Amino acid sequence: MIKYKDLVSEFENLKNSKGTLLGGIDPEHAARMKLQNRFSTGLDIAKYTAEIMHQDMKEYDKDPSKYTQSLGCWHGFIAQQKMIANKKYFGTTSKRYIYLSGWMVAALRSEFGPLPDQSMHEKTSVPKLIEEIYTFLRQADAKELNDLFRALQKAEEAGDAAKAKEIEAQIDNFETHVVPIIADIDAGFGNEEATYLLTKQMIEAGAAAIQIENQVSDAKQCGHQAGKVTVPHEDFLAKINAVRYAFLELGVYDGII
Image 1 (cartoon, rainbow, N blue to C red):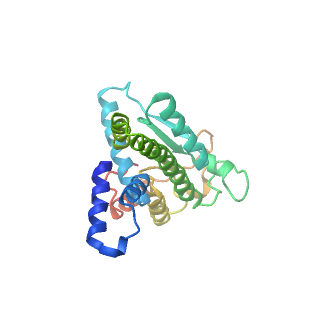
Image 2: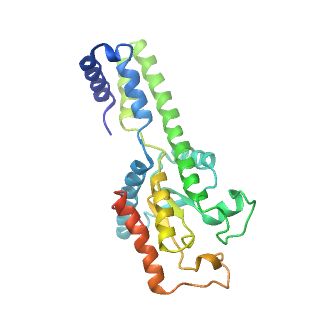
Image 3: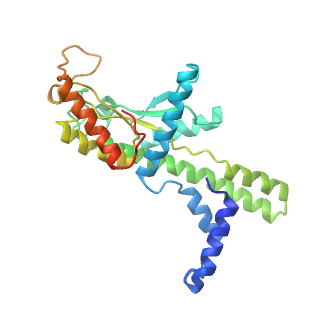
């Protein structure tokens, strides 16, 4: 990530080059806002988190003690508080993911009310929740960085150069609350085209990992119950390819299925 002072200089140069156009803008404030909003789109998040997941998988292959934890969430605030707590008590969000479960969405987020895990909830509920979760996680970034910026300004005003340098290092090495989401697409909510379209929405919201089941969509049951009807291998491969095509189309080449 770009260094704080380098970003301030960048905005100072921009202001100088634009003449009176940016006359009332403080380059330092612009730099702070830029750092508080590191991810412009969900695709930025998906590309960033896909890279993290691949690195974590490599580390796990070498040493199974380096496992990851996926924490179930059904609301953006819950996800935010989990990641804030991880940073507070463990000092990092490394190896911590969010698991967006289809049954949680069905039970707690469906407009039809609480439902069993049978893909009866609205298919767009999951991408909407992904977007909501990342909105809350980015808000956690903005809040923590804002506290650091205020502390930096206080140290500079007090003439405490050593303290200012220490806080600036914390800003430059800031660890985001944005972590990978494993998003449950159930059985794809239809044929391979329906799976492809829904996957695109999920990736555009920020998902780098899609979990999909090989059940018949309109007969979908909870994975822990009997009575499941699975699709032929060729049908499931078509859905897997549909998910991969969505990743490739959107430029998330390291997307995980």
